[in-house]
Image 1: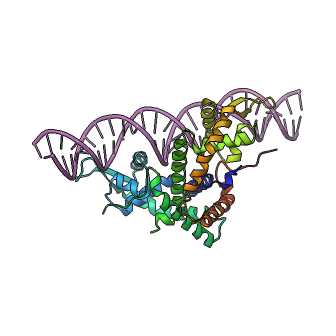
Image 2: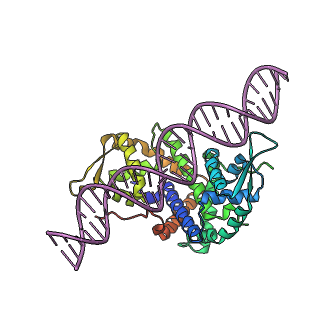
Image 3: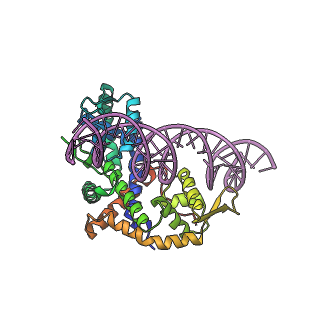
Length: 154
Length: 154
DNA sequence: TACTGATAGTCAGCATACTGATCAATATCA
DNA sequence: TGATATTGATCAGTATGCTGACTATCAGTA
């Protein structure tokens, strides 16, 4: 019978599990309370001021129903603002606050440290190769999930 | 600024997201209703008859609080039985049912197909290399999550 | 312009995952 | 033995992530 360790799906779950644990630990050590998902959303909002929720979801491959709760919590924490769009009354525009900008700046070392720790079993070269292979597999499977990565419609 | 695609944590989430979607799609096409987590638990119970929940959790690196619900649903579906242990009245012994065995047998092709599909962007060699690197990174980070992989205490 | 279809956001419901707490039972050791 | 520590299972609470449904709005077209 096939072992769990021969199943890419099982390895994917384990690696993701460790990645999240490492991220949360590093961020907490730095004195912050932000999940990987919240961090990615915050960074993307900063890089794309005024974007709407669907665009944000596409940029980081979240499901649009998941993003609602994530944004709720970022607003709750005072890191972003959500306001109705002037162009489209269905849409909400997202903007990072000064507090959000400050948090993002101060949290960056912890985030980068987490990325290093989750690859600490690999050489630099192996880490690069792992990321290359993941990117390639993801590109081929992108359309298979409900929340594919999408370019921003400039 | 660092791109999402240079963050192993982000790539881990994306790959896991696709892996789950592919698994569920293949299994549903085969006429079954079983999640990746439920499948791994069922296969492990079959391979280790009479094991208790903590041991099961250790073998597939689940959190012990998560396993309760997973087992509830497997029992609900009639695929396993949960009964009090004779040796330790705190523990529950888990056993696969005939129905569980039948399901496992019939679902295997779909599961294997899913593993192939989630690597379809890679050559066979690259797929092997991805799994090797994931295994290595996971081994180094195993203790960093709340639910590390553990050997069964024979 | 009125109809039709698509889109943005939300909600209910379900299944992982985790933290931290609790209860019952077992193990250890002074 | 009796006090203490540990362990197996569960629960409450929170955060992703999904399916499917729904409302409001927009866009395209007959």
